[in-house]
Length: 337
Ligand code: NAD
Image (cartoon, rainbow, N blue to C red; front, side):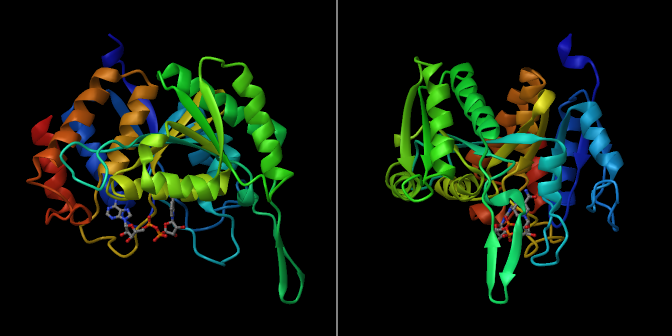
C-alpha cells in the first residue's frame, strides 16, 4: 500500500536546538514505522562557491532530487555580510509560499480556544530580497521588490489551498495606503486571482488593523495571504495566540512540487544544548510533510500522539509551563502512539 513504500526525504538538523528536536522527530518517526529514509545534510563550515553560502551544493541537490524534506532552524549571524542560509534555500529552491497553520491546542489553555488560522507568506521577495546598500555615509537603502509573477503565484496558492481545505475566506494583508506601488501591485494580483474563485470570500485588511483584530478576536480570520515581511511578523503574533513558538509548524512550497517543512521558530540559542526545547513545532512540521506525501494515516497517528501528550499535561516542556526535558516529552509522545 502507499503507506509502506519507502520514501527518501532530506533532513537538515540545522543549528542551535535543531539537532535536538530533529532527533525527537527521527525517534517518533521510527516508533510510528513511518516509511521514510532520511538523507541528512549539515550546514558547511565554509562558503560553497557553487551556492555562495554555507549550504553545500549537494544538500540543495538532495532536496531537488527528493522533492520533500524537513529542516531545522538555521542561525543567521546579524551583520556578518554573508547570504542568509534561509534566504539561499528559498531562492535556490524557489520556495515561493510558506504555509503556517496555527490552531488552539485542546487542553492547553490560552486566552483563546478558537484559533484556527492559516498564514500564507510570500517567501521570495519583498524586503527579503537582500538588496541593501549605503547611499552615502549615514544613509542606507533597502529595496522592496514586488513582482506580478511572485504575487500571482502566492495568491493562486492561497486560494487553491483555501478551496482544497474547505476554507471560506482569504484575507490579503497589506499597507497599500502607504506602499502604494508595491503593496498596491500585490493587492491587484490577489484581486485578479480572487475573481477566479467566486466560492471563496475575499477581503483586504491593512496590516496594523489586522494585528489589532487578531489580538482582539482571532476567529475573525481564516486564511491570510501577505508579502514576505508581514508574514514573518504576523505568524509569530499568531504563534503567541496559541502558546508560543514551540508549537507552530510550517511548510515551504516550491516550484515543481517541492515541499520543505520547517518550524516557524529559530535556533533558540538561549536554550540550545540544554535538552529544554519543545520539539512540537518541528514534529508538526514533519506531519505537514507526511500530509504532502499523502501518508495521512501516519500523519494522524503522530499528530494525535503529540496533541494527546500536551492535553494530558503530565509531560510538558518549560515553554508550556512544564518541567519535562525534550527527551522525556519525546518519550511520552512515543508512549501515546
Ligand atoms: P528564536 O525563534 O530562535 O527564539 C525566540 C524565543 O523563543 C527564545 O526565547 C527561544 O528560547 C524560544 N523558542 C523558540 N523555539 C523554541 C522551542 N522549540 N522550544 C522552546 N522555546 C523556543 O528567535 P531568535 O532568538 O530571534 O533567533 C535565533 C536565531 O535563529 C537567529 O540566528 C535567527 O536568524 C534564526 N532564525 C532562523 C529561522 C529559520 O531557520 N527558519 C527562523 C527564525 C530565526
